Structures are given as structure tokens and as C-alpha cells.
Length: 75
Image 1 (cartoon, rainbow, N blue to C red):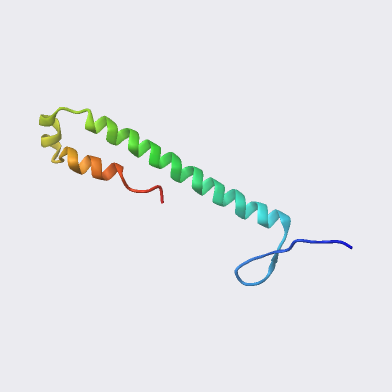
Image 2 (cartoon, helix red, strand yellow):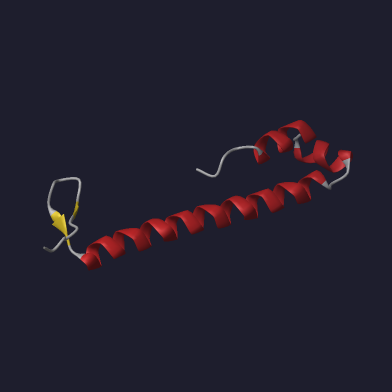
């Protein structure tokens, strides 16, 4: 008795192992890119929060706006 596992695409066609891995790799790259961007943005917002009040006023943002911008989810 043998068992085989077949992965199908959204259109019902079977995917090869290479196609399945390629899809996984692309998804992993997208996830890593999203996390990296999120962490970079969070770091930049933290730097902005360290600015004195007069500079925040000069660029036209409040601390509350910066803190609210940090909160969005990763995706």
C-alpha cells in the first residue's frame, strides 16, 4: 500500500514539488520582507518620538500621532 500527497492550485490542477516549494519560498520571502519593513518603520518612529517637542511641532506631528502610527499590524 502506498500513499501519495498531491497539492493542488486554486484552479484544481496538481502542483509539482518544485512548484509547491516555489510558492512556499515566495510566501516566506514576502513575510520576511513585511516583518523587516515593519521593524524598520517601528525603529524610525521611535527615533521620531525621541525628538524634542519643538521639532515635532516644526514637522507638524504630535507624539500621539507618532504613537498611533507605530500600532498598525504587520500586514
